[in-house]
Image 1 (cartoon, rainbow, N blue to C red):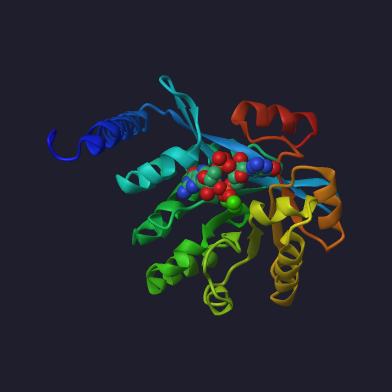
Image 2 (tube, protein in one colour):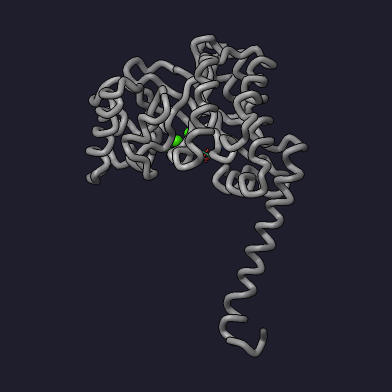
Length: 275
Ligand code: C2E
Ligand code: CA
Ligand code: CA
Ligand code: CA
C-alpha cells in the first residue's frame, strides 16, 4: 500500500482510520451505555401559541456519557439504528418518560420520536401499548412523531402499526414536514393527527427568505385537512408574532427554553401548579 499513491496513503488513510476508530469507540460506548442507564429523556415545552399555555412536552433523548459528556441524538441515534439497538434504547427512554409524565397535570401530552427502523418491528405496537399499561399513563395523552422517511418504508406494515396505535387512542404526528419527499397523496395515506413544520422553515420567518410562503402553505394545508399544526424552532418573538398571525397552532423552541432533564422539568411544572 505504501508504493501505491503516496499522497493517498499519507493524506487519506490515517484520517479514515481515526474516523473508524472513533465510530467503533462510540458504538462500544452505546452498547455499554444502554444497560448502564446513560440514555435519558429531556423535555421540550410545547405551547399553545394563541393562549401561551403549556400543552405538553416532546421527549428528546440525551446520552449522558461519562466519557464524552452530554451527547446529541444527532450523533447516537444513527449509530443505534445501524447496530439495531434503537428499539431497545427507545423502549428504555419511553419507560422513563412515562414514569416522569405520570405526575404531570392531566391536560399535558407527551410526544416521542419513533425511528423508521422501529416501525419494521412487527411487535412495535404491542411493545408500546405494554409500556403504557405498565405505567398507567393514558394512551390518549401520548403522541408519536414519525418522519416522512417512514412513508417510504413498507407502507402496509406501517399502516397496520399506526392503525392499532390509533385504535388505542394514541395520536400520530408527521414530523419535520416539508423536508422529505412525501407527496400530498402520501400525506393522506396514513391517518395523521398533526403536522409538525420543520425548524428550517420556521427560522426563516425572521429573515427575508422563502420560509414565510412555505410556512403559510403548510398551515393552510393543515387547515384544509383539519390537521392541527406545530411549528418547531420558535427562537424569538418576531417568529412568534408571524406564526400567531397565521392562525391557531402549537409552537416549541428556544424562545420557551431549551430541552430540560426530568428534575428541571418537575421544578418548572411545580412552579406553575401543573405537577
Ligand atoms: P426533531 O424531532 O426535529 O427535534 C427538534 C430538535 O430541534 C431538537 O434537537 C431540539 O432540541 C431542537 N430545537 C428545538 N427548538 C429549537 C430552536 O428554537 N432552535 C434550534 N436551533 N433548535 C431547536 P435534538 O434534541 O438535538 O434532537 C435532534 C433530533 O434527534 C430530533 O429532531 C429527532 O429527530 C431525533 N431524536 C431525538 N430523540 C429521539 C428519540 O428518542 N428517538 C428517535 N428515533 N429520534 C430522536
Ligand atoms: Ca420530533
Ligand atoms: Ca421535528
Ligand atoms: Ca426538525
